[in-house]
Length: 189
Image (cartoon, rainbow, N blue to C red; front, top):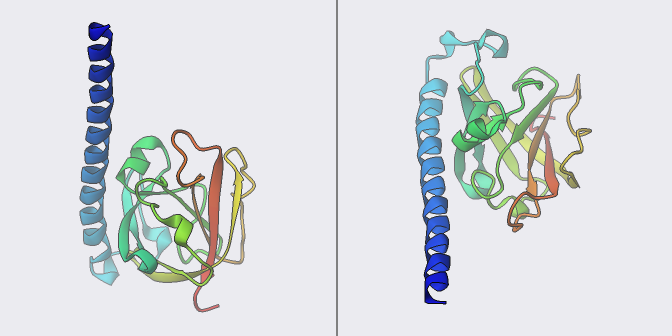
């Protein structure tokens, strides 16, 4: 019985060590990405004049998402696979970038970059900083959908709508069954 108890303790310690390492690794990747993002958006305005001039590959850092409610700057990365999301907020590549008058979809993990999303309210702002300009959006709606629901992805042209999605419920352990989706429109409208 003593051997079994020791094995259970060792397995538990291994899980804790692995979880701690994963958190540390993601934190390190996000810190590296925010440094890259700050360098990118601080380049002279003449280097990139609009979204069409950006040359983007999967996994590239492309901008910054600032959420005033949390006073948090998050790197935006092109793509939404696990490696991309470990670096920051993922940009769903079939959607447009700010200033292109269509849907912009950003996704992130609820327990890392989008921690605290349950506190968001209509009227909250999201600021996207790109090499070619800064765009402010105001949240006007949110909903919870099934994890497999793809109806939230689609053209909103000619209206520019920022859509943010993360897993839901926020305190769920494991692979969450739903997604929390927040909608925001440009502040000037």
